[in-house]
Length: 485
Image 1 (cartoon, rainbow, N blue to C red):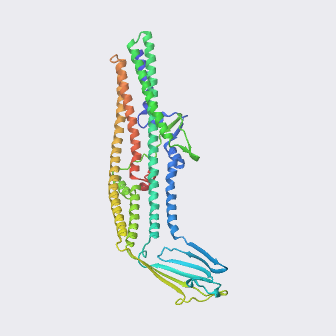
Image 2: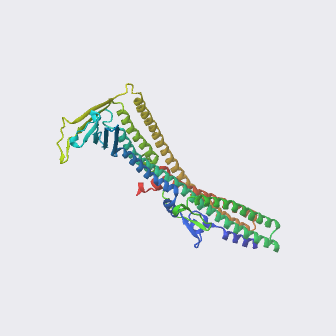
Image 3: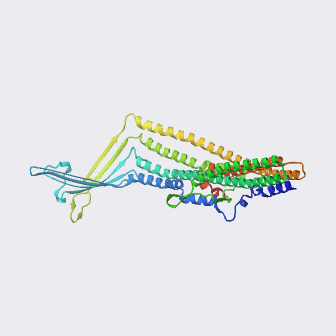
């Protein structure tokens, strides 16, 4: 009768609430909890790596701004003077402003003031205009640089880089979120498993105390007492191992907890995880192909490679343009004379400067090699792109199949744990009827404990796979909203 009482107490104390779907029952109402959504919110606002990822957009803006700097107007001034033995040889002052345009034409305005006894006749300016002269002109490429030049090439590439930077930002952000969420589930289920062992120890202590009392009353043998003690010691050692796992998982999650001003936050031992999973959605079989199609067009790695391909196409246009001879036409209107009461009408056919620059390398080895290298890079990117699409498709299918199997395993482990609960109850009945003993009861208890550990491990793996699927798809912030909302 006393043995029956012991086992009834043991069964009543067994943590049945750890069967899948009842995790939330394990938390005390007065304990401080931390949900996954709260962790993600903290990380989004304060995590240094996520904040660093957000800088990618700013880097891209500065890259474009630097490229556009080649279209900035430029002022150039020069002054020189020579005097020797009381003779003013010359005074020359020249200032000009160049205004590069997107179109293949460069306007230029030049203001000069030259005078002196030995001034080069080419630089002579009449005294009637107080030695001042204004020249306005343009330079027009009709060969190399007519359709595209280096500055336009760099600006176009910088604009493409903005899309590539956005893809890199998504990639870095997803990687950090994925790591954080996995760490959260490690901590969550390590906490659940430790709570299981904590209650198992209470069961073992109850069994040991009651068995020792029965031994003192002569109702139990010394072997039963030793067996109960060994069970208690075993449970305590197993709990210590689980506590170490809980501490490690808590530390790993704490790495990702940050507050304002880059202040790291510590996860207290008193804080309990809260089972609220914002990533519990799993696409159906009919949606898996939709994920693949979307990923092959929008995955960050695909966007980066396509951006690189587009940049190489721009470079190829410029390299092909470089095969042409360089021919620049220059025309400048000498708008003189200048009167104090205004400007005279320009004499387009009389007062002007005209010139032509021509250059062309005979072998074009540098230009041909540059073009061929660009085309080789394009082939390399095409190979990477084809392989990356294939790899992404394989990763999605593999993750999805593993996810489905994991869901089935969780269901099976839940049934196994429930069946072991039934067997333990049956063993209790056998002991009560004198058909079993404490040794067999402990064996059944061990099997039940092992099944619950497998169940929690399987559930932890399932939660990680649920977040792994949007990660391999490349969904922004690991959210399916881009596809299903």
